[in-house]
Image (cartoon, rainbow over all chains, first blue to last red; front, side, top):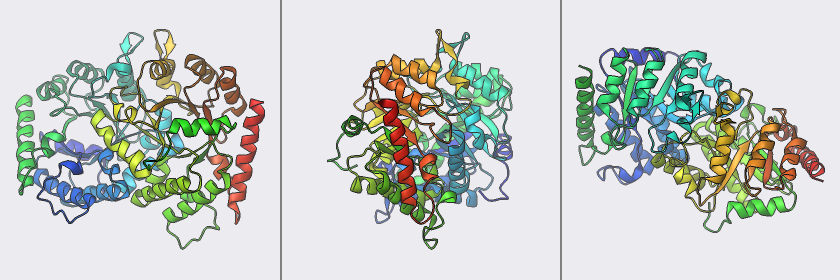
Length: 281
Length: 281
């Protein structure tokens, strides 16, 4: 991240103030790349070509871009380089749009310093997702980084998310205990946010009501996972919050087919943005 | 991982059957590399030189090697290549010793397929560490991989680990609920293990008593973190289990100084191995 890049909080505020809440997920899988991308390029190079075109096709719509680290690591060192190039391209063509690296990291304190360097200095992301299980103390290297965003997993979008997240602690499920502690007790120089899946509408409503309206919530699970976009928007607005982004990955990448795959991605993003704006109207 | 590599369970059993329980951590930080390594090499190349020498100096002592992904990711794509080379070197010079990649991953199901490819196919590790927060269903791509090991974080070694891990659920702290579910309820083709820090002796004793003796426990936190090596060994033996490895990273790497830094690493590993064997006697 360049020294002159604005704080994640300011980038996100500026985008959501325009009514943009769509987070364009860049979960780029080599197996599903359009056939029309030059096959003489390496897998990692084709991923970059795809990402650059999707970014350019959606940059006036997106509130944020969110590559998921797993898809890049699957390609080894070349995949990490593709991830770095993707973020550099976003910073070049859309410097006003924040990049959230969905890396779901968390280790003990001193070890997290390596992840902080990887995410913010090597990859150049503006924000990251982390697991809560090790607690605030362990996450200090993330939390002490000024200007970035740190989204803590609270209620994940997957089937079976409740196995541990629903366990009752003092009469409240664990995910609510995590949300409350993160949003009310943890201190940070970074902007602290939460991850709550759109596949769990009631839980999202509870969490949104539990934390201040300024706490940003990253909401995955719309599209292939079946989450309810309209309910997610309303849960935020009814709690008086515009600090949210709704992520769609496969629903946009999957529409990017054929020679002009950027057009397909753009049409899908446009339709999702319209749905969000209608739900917010 | 080559098709002919034995299962992680068999590799680990064979090592612990000889009384070897020391896991040599490869948390190699560029800032603390010996000055005597050729400075004309890149940072990532020097990391590989260091790791190769430490591996060669300790391979007759180690029960397992455990690189932590954060230290390699901090160097970007070159770091990932250094990690891959390190594991390939271990497989070449010490094919009988399992490699645990301490990556602390976990995402939703389909996304974990990328991490599975990264950890086992790209890096070539035999086992991995994962977060429990998303539950068994999400972790299926890890659990369904035959022949590997999957160590679930139960009680981490860091100060403040209790923030969520100690929360009471039905009268038992969360870490015990996690340990019991993982060891008694989850199904896997992989060998399921647990991570429990040596810095929490009582918790380790509880967990060891709660799960079958064959469930392997990876025990970090000895050395720089101040965990009690003797108590960790006794907690296992008194529960009738030899399925444990005690990880030391900084305590070995920190002794690898000067021209013959392999000798320093060997002496430190030898002393730790002696301590483990004396505690087990």
